[in-house]
Amino acid sequence: MIQTDICIVGAGPVGLFAVFETGLLEMRCHLIDALPQVGGQLSELYPQKPIYDIPGHPSVLAGDLIRNLEAQIAPFKPTFTLGERVEQLLPQADGRFRLETNRGTVVEAKAVVIAGGLGSFEPRKPALEGLEAFEQKGVEYMVRDPEVYRGKRVVIAGGGDSALDWAMYLSELAAELHLIHRRDEFRGAPDSGKKVFDLAEAGKLHLHLSAQLVRLEGGDELERVVITDRNKEEVAIEADALIPLFGLSPKLGPIADWGLDLDKRQIKVDVETFETSLPGVYAIGDINTYPGKLKLILCGFHEAAMMAHSVVKRVRPDRKSTTMKYTTVTGISGF
Image 1: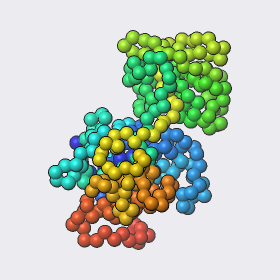
Image 2: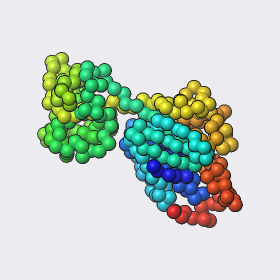
Image 3: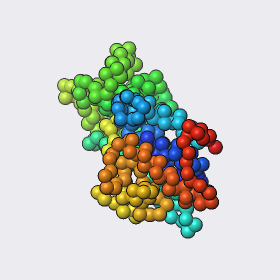
């Protein structure tokens, strides 16, 4: 069991900044996220997309913003559970909370902060014969550990940034790599697309454009991925693994069953404290709602700061003062 002051559900930009704000008030955080890396949508969907409304940055790439936030919170030594989704939130008799994930991880915290953006992300699955039968038997929708694919025959499907980035990465690990895309041009960054074409010309991967997934075949494990090529003819590819990377769709998921007051799939909060209808549970970022709500990263950062000053009264009830001085005066000291 992991014990902490605050468990933050969601490791996107707002969840990460909450570590900084609560860390200034000497509270420890553990973060849980269903994605295999921190950063939420910014890391998973558009790491190369520029963001223009972060104070002090005329323009900053989404991926760079996440890396900066990681560096900013490093002094506070947060801990993480990634690639797991919180299934249960259980209030305890002593006022603490017990959180359990889909993979059996248990976290006990004095307070919970939900910073899940638009909710947990679920992969967009292709309409493909035999797909469910081979899930976790060769079919995975995220790359959690690239080393799993070393020396294997791998098929990636998709044409966005994630598909291109993993095709480039796994071309150095896989014994044989195929990239399937339904169009002739990629949706991802042009530079990444060029690199993938270069890898194909160099024989590092097999590129199938204007192609479609048709069905999967095999016994107890995946053995073949059948596609149609640009001539509408079926081609069977011997494969140990298929990674369909068609993006993610947000779902509120188990949060909907936690007994919180909701308004159209968003969590209602007290605008002064950002506490939900369940005392000790807070919600910040895009997942919450209140009069005048703006879905901006900047506003989520503000909510994180306000939440920190409220939650410290619960986590550190013996603290004499919760007034925060300017960091230009106090500096930043970790644990």
